[in-house]
Image (cartoon, rainbow, N blue to C red; front, side, top):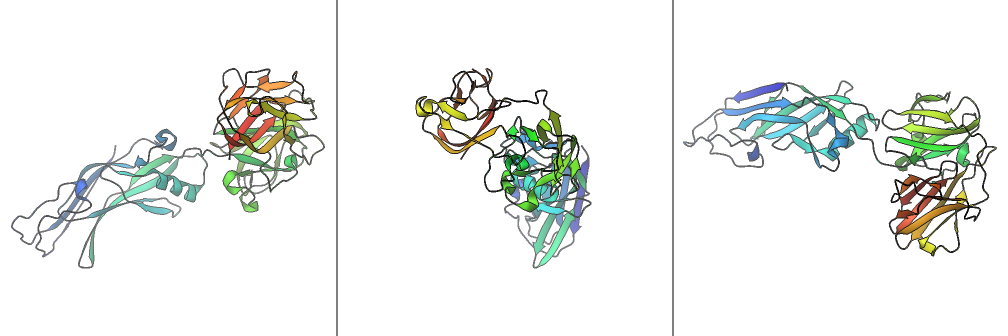
Length: 367
């Protein structure tokens, strides 16, 4: 750790007694028991945090430590501000506590506002500032700059295809990416080989200026590339059935061509289970595709499950064609269903339900 030391001694003809204030927890103030004129002394020694601060590891923590204090003392009621800045001109102030912690939410908001949500290490200069105000005059002690390195967490949210795959539906969330992990989300369907695909996030859905696409705002016909907000349309190099994967840690996308280029087409897909005592099927709607092929992606919005229980998907009302849960993941809002697998269990509630009959993937999003 790099030690940062600074001090300020300002001659002031002031008579005072020991001060007690909001910042007493930094250090015990020095006292002038005889109430004689004294020098104003503010002294701070801190250690910059050497390691990269990985926000993902902090989970639900409310605070994040950006520096370590070694010796902080003042004989006056000083206030402290931590400033973070970069070479691009971005700058923000934080109020640290006695141990060098600040609000984790405020740091995350700063990163998102300055750089966006891409999971890339961000390096900023930290500088601790002590201020003392007396009779309208401000005395200040400023540290040398030290580095603060932050690796943002990948946000948990759903993303939605916008393109010919869902007939450019910008009103309803009908075609989600399936969240294999927070970082890696996919959709498997037919791609025409024409430049016709973009993506929205939950928070940007319906905003034409916030559509994710090919980096640099130009259209890109390629099997892999980088995506960004405001980017151009993407497509694979030839028409066919593909799995399109977006990686929200690296902001890379790639198309993987399926071995089976003739997936079985079904007339209907339904949700069945305890919610309707395994009675009549709850029909899902196939996403309307603007391509020459069916989408194979199905959905039902606002499905109310009164009690937690077993669920399955089946095609053409045929018990011989049904998808249950993966053997290893039975209780989950997302998973890959397998033929004749065990029942899927989700808690009681109201959900938007999604299913892909090529991969067997299912997704229940709580309303």
